[in-house]
Amino acid sequence: MLRYLTSGESHGQSLISILDGVPANIELDIDEINNELKKRQGGYGRGARMKIEQDKINILGGVRGKKTLGGPISIEVKNKDYENWSKYMNPMEDIDLESKKVSNVRPGHADLVGCLKYDFEDARNVLERSSARETASRVAVGAICKQILKNFGIEFISHVVQIGSISDDNIYDFEYIKKHVDNSEVRCVNKSLEEKIIKEIDNVKKDGDTLGGIIEIRVKNVIPGLGSYTQFDKKIDGELAMHLMGTQAIKGVEIGIGFDVSKSVGSKVMDEIYYNENTGIKRATNRLGGIEGGMTTGDEIIIRCAMKPIPTLYKPLNSIDVNTLKSYTASIERSDNCAVPACSIVCENVVAFVICKYFLDKVGGDNLRDINSNYNSYIKRLGERGWKK
Ligand SMILES: Cc1cc2nc3c(=O)[nH]c(=O)nc-3n(C[C@H](O)[C@H](O)[C@H](O)COP(=O)(O)O)c2cc1C
Ligand SMILES: C=C(O[C@@H]1CC(C(=O)O)=C[C@@H](OP(=O)(O)O)[C@H]1O)C(=O)O
Image (cartoon, rainbow, N blue to C red):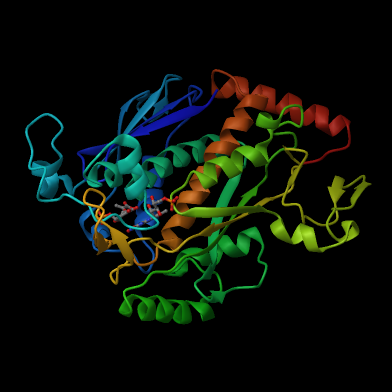
């Protein structure tokens, strides 16, 4: 089973992830993984931290000569900012615990409940781990998963469909998104909205406020039957939602037309099925976003995620000192102002992990050759039942 854990604090030495269950003989394109990390650092609205970091992976185990060995892969992404923080963060020596102490807990971040639950007087002990710095690890893991799936033609893309009050109501196809998204500082395919979005981010920033938005993720060339209806925890839509909701600041996940299923009649929600000899079994539409009964249908997977605005505000909200319980405004930590474009890269890679996990559950093997043979025999059998790639 494909699984991973991450470890590390935002201003600690490194972020570490261990990805276990990767088959042997998968060739890794290290530049491509680093390119994903670079994209995650970008996007209009990011804070000063991103000028310090230049995220790159350092693989510590599980890979030899850029090919996977079948064992757990350990991945390090160094925090350059540790140089500025070692006297507050060093795990092996006495440190200065007072100067960076945070006790005016920020509404919307993990500070208050983290202090209560883990019995801390210093919310730094919470925020160092709750920080979305951890998403660099998740992107590194997802980027490896993408490379496993690339061998089978499965591709991923994401774009931003809304930031603050500005939204793009057009529907684009996969290739169009792929061609245009990286040209935009806000990962918005519709270039005419970019200027408006940037203006809105700037205006809100002037007021000491922040913005969230909506991200769309698409997956192409998936095979039918990833996931299962036979048990609730085998459903791929459930697992996708869990991993995406487990991403910092994601507050909603929709598949296909999502919440709109509730306001339409059944005939306008279900995707009609037909068959012809040239195309095989097909659906006339893809309103349900490529998932039925907890299983992929083979159509494009379409997911949308809502990200809340960044909780740290430069014009802070009312809060309390977690130790004295006196009223104060929340503490101000260096922060992003809008991280929706960055979060789009995070969500895309989070989805890549889940798809890869279910793909390997269905047609996996110890090595690439075995997976190829399982994959081909499954596709052949589906072909006998009328499904065509
Ligand atoms: C890419 C990305 C960057 C983020 N940057 C910040 C930030 O600079 N400041 C901040 O307060 N929150 C930031 N967040 C959001 C917080 O990490 C998140 O709101 C917090 O961990 C609490 O978790 P929750 O929102 O899921 O409840 C960011 C989230 C993401 C995905
Ligand atoms: C470091 C990253 O994002 C951080 C996420 C984050 C938070 O509270 O989630 C707070 C900020 O941390 P810092 O105070 O060090 O600037 C962001 O920069 C990153 O995305 O790599």
